[in-house]
Length: 583
Image (cartoon, rainbow, N blue to C red):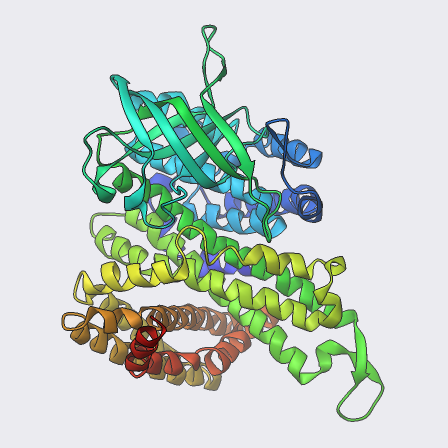
């Protein structure tokens, strides 16, 4: 909690976000009180669901999706306490807190239980989409119930023949009258596609209207409720949607992943025909950021578990030959614990900084918005990809620290690893994020935003050089990493026009390189704050820990940037040759 509030206050541009007229009704004391209460709620009511959900899972019984009973009780309490309302418009019943507060809440909820957290996560995304793209009638009809949490929502993209290639979507939408259509087709991998937690489920469905253009440009977006309005004004009439199956999964087992059959279901067009994918990007952007936060969330839980185990597990003598000690005293275990801590705090810092840029990009002054929007778009694939990839590493290290006990289900360490493994896959795999980053964030503007980013890193380097010896060491490492980034950037900008295959062969290592640099940049910013606090004798133990963690990251994690830079440039020919020989 303390580190979350530190990142919120000092790394999310809170001084600018908190001054926005849009958030004039919120002060720092309100935020602390709300997050403290939500922390209690998640610890006491949601965290106990994790092992229950993993053991029992979601089940399809007599054509009805059944979750363990405690999930229903917890969800009703979640709605009763108004937690879904946290960051949404006061015009439709929300509390209107900044997005950065929602990021912290998302971390808490998903750290408590990833399976439970997925339902509110998707509802949040649907609310943002409808608020941005829905008609007034659609907003008035759906937003109050979604914001209250009485209704939940899903994202319906994937089909059997169309995984991430949305241009291959075949689901049909036949016009009836006005905005009313009939939807036909099959959607797969629909998270929380059917359940009984909420009173209704609002499916947001991509489908193709008659005569629509081929590919992604021919897609339209529809609201397809599970229950339609009855004559008495209640929503009890079943729409023509069937859940034909639930997937049996490696992890997040209590999150029902459904195959949905649309058999002429009534749907309502959002906006204009043929603009569906553009509208859906609002929800996709929100979901990708939230999945990055899920990576931070499960990393934090794994680190806390590993730290507690390492403190009480007595195994092996100390190196000086004295009595047996807790394993946290062994250098290699300390190395793993510090790597978990540095990566978790670094990814949190990166994600919270993005949340602040997103708020400024949406509600900032005219002079603030352009830079904020470009930086938010630049950082979004980094948060989604890096925070989730590192979550897999961190949960794996948790198992390693537990040793043999980590490999059995009894400790729960294995579940965290299994749950984390989906995060680099859904809402756009790491490879998709890398391609999007190179194509839309680098090549699209000729590296303009990337150069702005590098300048911001360089400014932090300069400020660190005025600090302590540790701060100077971090500055030197940042400078070396930034130069590797700039060399790779120049190579990609020069190579892409001549050889796209060569450039995109380096997309993944370049994304990891940039993410690593951006994470250490934020940790460097945290050092500037921490050293100022230490000089004024404020919370010196915590602030000293922040400096130590940042230095560890710079010396043990950031150094991977140079290897990734080599992979971007030198490894391309061999990679393409290997692909050719494999073909």
